Image (tube, rainbow, N blue to C red):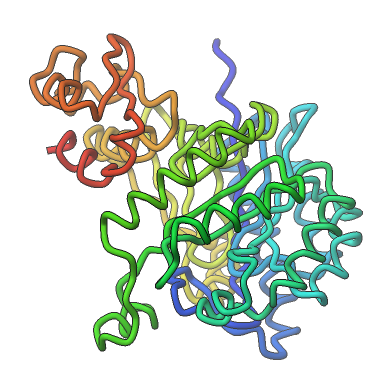
Length: 382
């Protein structure tokens, strides 16, 4: 009998000291919620145990603390969650344990304790090295704190990733190039440059609607994207995903590759999602979004999530959506139910347009295809 596939574990910690105006994640303000946070940590541990009953024995590839701002989490609780996951599943020798953090001086002071708790890879939400841009983005750190945090993180954790946001209002290509080069000079092995997206229902969405915020047009966004690729390629970074660049294969985010390659993952914490292959079918798990609902459900039923079986078409559509984001794409056999083959008319049409690679085995977006990935994926899925 074949060994069950390995999996990743995602932990959602929803607390933030400030809610950024572009954020549409499931987050809440961190305002003296000490007792609630202790209850939530208890619920997360209990939920992990319940999920182990669902998955059975597996090898554990990665643990990822996201949010929210998990660097606000008590390091003692971080260590407890890590040890719980390690005890429930069999960790691979080079288990990746990642945690998202903000660069405030107060949080940077917690980095040694988080490393001692078992975190080996830090994903640092720098977003910009310009004070004006940080103020616009609603961040609670300045450029000086960002630089200090990068230095502390690089000295504390074996692996460091830096998040940046570009295509900001008024941003020029020259400004972005200089900023990106400045970050690279500080030595991170992984950079995640995200193009600013205006998500429905956010403060930025309302500001755009009122005409108070003007984002770059398509031509400027294109130029900024191309500048991102050029600068990072010149520095030895591979664009292994649309918004993720790594200096060598070892620097890639193993946990995010779990998502993009369609592997199994457990999701715990308010609003967390999971995907598992059980009894030959793809199962989606979704945790209760509100903290009180999540904690209450775990206390009353032992689990904080609901489960739903995906149809073969739904599973293939999701595989297409996520798989086209990475450079190795998706095997045609994984999306055959959508009528996608190397010879399918819509595939050949997009190959001729230069948006898909001419590959007989895999569906892969080209650099030009990544620029219009949402439209490309929509056209292939229909």
